[in-house]
Image 1 (spheres, rainbow, N blue to C red):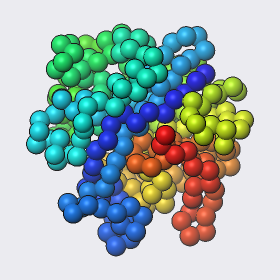
Image 2 (cartoon, rainbow, N blue to C red; image 1 turned 60 degrees about the horizontal axis):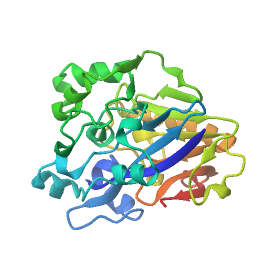
Image 3 (cartoon, rainbow, N blue to C red; image 1 turned 90 degrees about the vertical axis):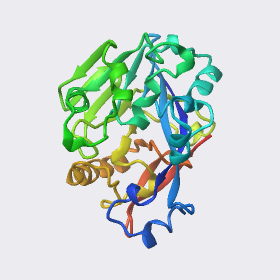
Image 4 (tube, rainbow, N blue to C red; image 1 turned 135 degrees about the horizontal axis):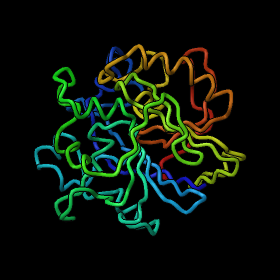
Length: 293
């Protein structure tokens, strides 16, 4: 199995929202905000090539800048172009060759890339792809719950309704050979971390040699979006069940450090991921980083 980390989108978020209860004088020492209090963000995805020949994506990023108005592009610091499409072309993959997409959750910056930009003249960017989504996430995304204000905008969700889809009911399931979906809750009720396990896992990255014998990686999604969010309470204000996010960190970060799992971040502007070590002051810290190429 071959896994390639990709920068699918570059954008900016309000710094405070990415750290929740943590005061700005503390979080701003880790990552500096701009004059609008925004911090740089990536939307990372994984290109996964299975041993049986199928090719897929873990998440899809924000999508092409042309999907958004000029005001939205300015607000989110989004663009230009569509880095995911450029990276797929560089890897020799066309959108019509993507066989599956596994979503951590369905917020705009993770599912937006599945919605085709106007220049594609179709609803979905990857029309052949079978979508894997946790059933709870799909229910929350499609029932117009007023308590989930603007969490699932129709222009992101509606184009997915007609797609071939596997809804995963279990909290832990191997959905594809070596690809596991683990429901974390926390960020959303149906949010999942995606674990990839293979005895001959090939990491397609210039620094792959720094991870000899790698057999597991975990794409944590928004329960740990950056290396700056490793501490228990350093979590986003978007978390709908914040104590579940902390419980996930309590249960999984020690395992990640102990088993040498490569933890992959979805929004870190500098690192695709890292292995971890225990740290007296910060609870957990980066042991071996995997920089954004």
